[in-house]
Amino acid sequence: MKNVHRSLNNRVFAGVIGGIADHFDWNANIARLIFVLLAITPMFPGLIAYLILWMIMGDPE
Image 1 (spheres, one colour):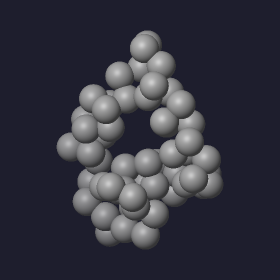
Image 2: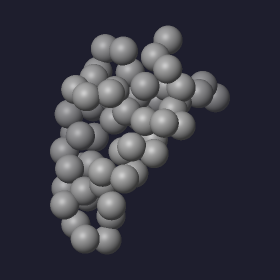
Image 3: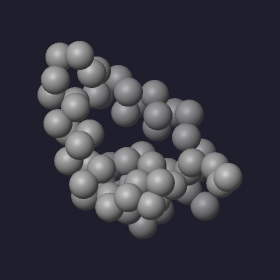
């Protein structure tokens, strides 16, 4: 199983969602849309989750 890395090609801000989408072979735009929808719900702290993923995910290859 390959490691999750931030995307070098599918990036809008830091490549976190693009890296997750590449890892699971998802469409990056749909993954971003799902993340934004989850981020605006009160039960999912989207910005905090994004920042934590940005710090723990590896650099783009």
